[in-house]
Image (cartoon, rainbow, N blue to C red):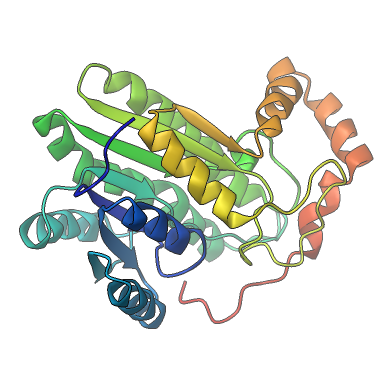
Length: 271
């Protein structure tokens, strides 16, 4: 297992939700945690809370969709905190509209944050890891990046892309000392997908389980993590058979094809 004490861990989308839980998980390990988010008020609140608990925490207002901003952040963190040992690409946005009804602006924003933003962070931070011969990248993907569902098409597309780019990166970095972990959560009760109807074969998962699984994935250098674990078998069986119509039928029987039609729009988020 990796010793994370004193390691610099940078987490995007860390002001609340899963990002905040990841921050606490690594802070408890003695890591120096760098929080980034575009929600200035929530970020300041989270950083203050963690500092009061005695954790070594730093915070930066940052929009990952800006490639230039990602490289500037890398320079600033290097100068003010130190070299980043673990990069956790957690920030994401979603909308529950159909493929045909989603606006151009929504498509662009989802792609810029969920996919391109992750790539810019990789390009900004990973080269220094390679130069040092050590580091770890965690990309928060999704079960929706394995099997797509209706009313979540743009989100699914970006998660499929993120899994693909991570698989390529992992092979490219072989022997460099830099490791990669993909984390695929199922239905996680963070509020991001509030109003979603969960199929009867599963249930809402405790977000802490994802944070714990991610931490274990880094410590044990796991290439891919699923929460809950059984969805790994589900994804392998369904889309992996190359029979998409069978997947459509299974989703109709399970009710997964209606899951996200009832998802509430997020309000008050600075996206």
